[in-house]
Length: 231
Image 1 (cartoon, rainbow, N blue to C red):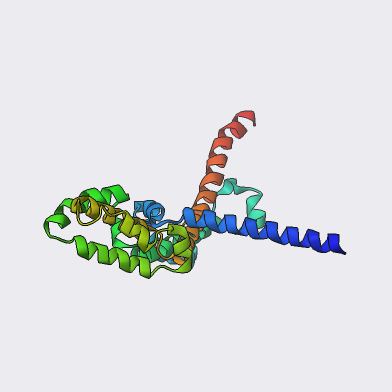
Image 2 (cartoon, helix red, strand yellow):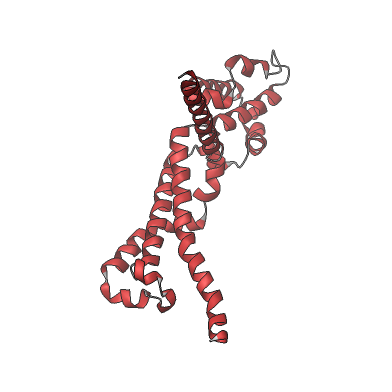
């Protein structure tokens, strides 16, 4: 009996570790800086219009005959004739949904700057001349105070560590401001993990659905000359 319960406990512990690794992987790959590559791409932006185009195609039966590829062969026994359009429609729909959420919720700093160094380099000189050191420190403190439990585990930055990262007594205010901008960017990059992960999954699902018909068509086009040659 003890062995059975011991095996069950070990299995649950292993399952919990696997679950933690999956969530950690999803979180690290769904940072706003990573989502920006897809969220700002022309492909994803154009996908917003695809659902409307899909409605016209799916509702117009006269178009269906032109969308059927005769070389699908055995695929047509199991799939509808316009299966490619369905996958393109749903794929672009998921991309459009992810793009809209990204546009609404991605922090402005992440949309504008690709890295913390770029933000520090682009903002420090100008904001220093305007005397914005204390205001930027207040903004970073506000970001620290608003973090969720998960965000605190991700960032690992406390207000005490923030103070220690400063030069002290205003010895080098420009350097302090630069560090504050870097903290600002990193804290913004990990905001809303419970929203970032669904956006990442929407992008991943949408791209996968777009890749399937493209891959099948590529294989068919590649195989077709060999069939004609051997036939």
